[in-house]
Image (tube, rainbow, N blue to C red; front, side):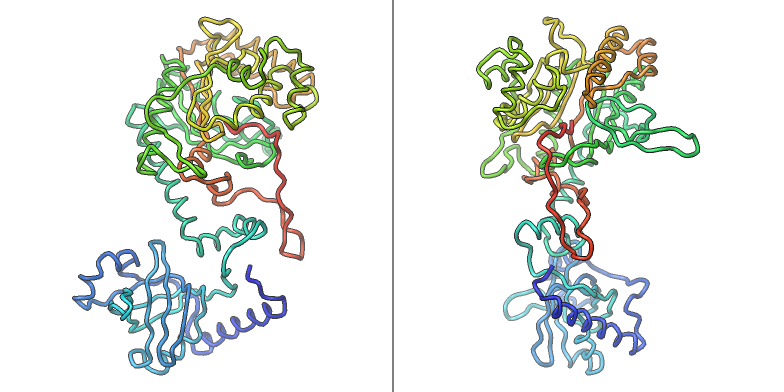
Length: 511
């Protein structure tokens, strides 16, 4: 992580181990079991006048991020989860024997300090140490700074270091947590019940994606990590719950790129006696609420500009938006022509792609990047949406929307299909697509069809890609920047280096 040559780095590590040995030789445990603090660094800064005037001893703990010695005194920066404060070690206050141990400390060590507050000549709030304790010895050097792609990859691999040296990264995840708690509070306040459904499923469904497959030894059966929780949540609507939601981890065995990680967080909610127009309204209100909570504004920074999330959001029909982009009526074009347009737009369609997949890819290539301000794309072709209710005015369409903002899809919703006969026909059509080679087509779920036979009320269903929403609200360029531990390729054995992770431009959308 630092730029030392291998020999210099080995010498550096030997030096730290020698210091560790000194602590033990002095009879001091360098890894004690606990340490009682009285204040956090943020509180010391906020209450400085009060605490400095009282000369009340304070006890604080954190990681040393800088040290500079001046003969018989040393200044250091101590960082905890609330920020940093300066610490002043002085031989006259600590005594010679204790002050000697300051020299046994290194940047990166976890240290507890007791002392009183004062202001330096340069105006910096500082703790004058009357005692200190090593709480954990750091044997690895902290990086001086991150730069370039290789270091960026290491940031994701070694997030524990990234969080230490880049406070702005911590702030992203604090804001992510605020968004999640705000989301729950919003839906709870509107009468939705939070539920949990299986992650391991005997059949996967609710989306078009390839699953991860595993085996249950005791039952001797194949199981799948869920790609969506939709079909289970709609079973609960059949069972009499009228408003349910789940914060869920979904898993899709697909490529990785700016918007995709194989493990991601989804929010799905289902609302009985409502339709997709109700779903769009609630989705807009939810995101506007979270923007105000997390960003403090409905005009959020995005790339080099600003996204305006206030007011109503426009609706554009899917086929009209696609037709404008390709300057033709998509329904009038053959599959061969659609495939050729995809190829000309920069990506060849997968073998066996039918009209639905070609529409989907062409929309992603030609339309999606240009959808910067929030917009609902509505009324999708029937063949693209096997779980959506037929459009009440156009038999060849379904009542479905997708929300786009910042050039990416954020949400997907339907007036849910509740006619069991129609649903069976849609599933059978999907199975026919699988037989033709589409391994992302949905599978037929007999138990879900049985549930529909008992009767499911008219229902609005919405799925929101939470990671992408956090990207939008925190102005982050890639999904890896909002995941604490994104999936990565293994590092090259014995070198400590890694190959750059390949992106898959053909990955299925996360919602």
